[in-house]
Length: 208
Figure 1: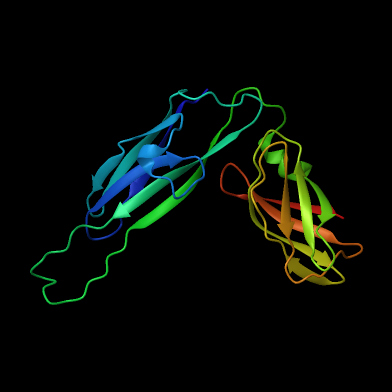
Figure 2 (figure 1 turned 90 degrees about the vertical axis):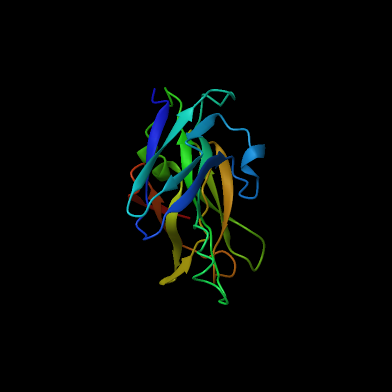
């Protein structure tokens, strides 16, 4: 039932910052003004003085209909723009200024979804995939929840091979590459760490 959430930004630097906030649907190259999402970020632009903070309110507007049988995902963006330098202080000097952008996943979870999101990572189904000479895994998510990973590897013949883990959408499949392994291996086992709602990890294992 929660239709809004507050995000606290802190400027721990010694100079003020101009901050722009917006949400997108996954295309990190899209211009903020061209994006249509059922959320607003207020205020969209703010100044944060040194050692001070600013609260950004993200509110669901229901302007676009979202699926009711599964989660939807969006990305919350924060662009930090440094202040314009003092012309006298930088006269005859080379100057490099950087604008930092942070992107955080925002999940919309409708009421009444079946199951428990903390159990979704353990419900994943893992299978061998890929062609000859290349090892990859097909992962099926039968739940209405997104599953994100912090890391994963495949254990075979006493060795560990990193898995190129990806976020898996509800009721979908993803193919993940296994680095350093050529083809399928017998008696292999997958070890992974998924991220829960609180930023912690859920450890899981699966035999192939």
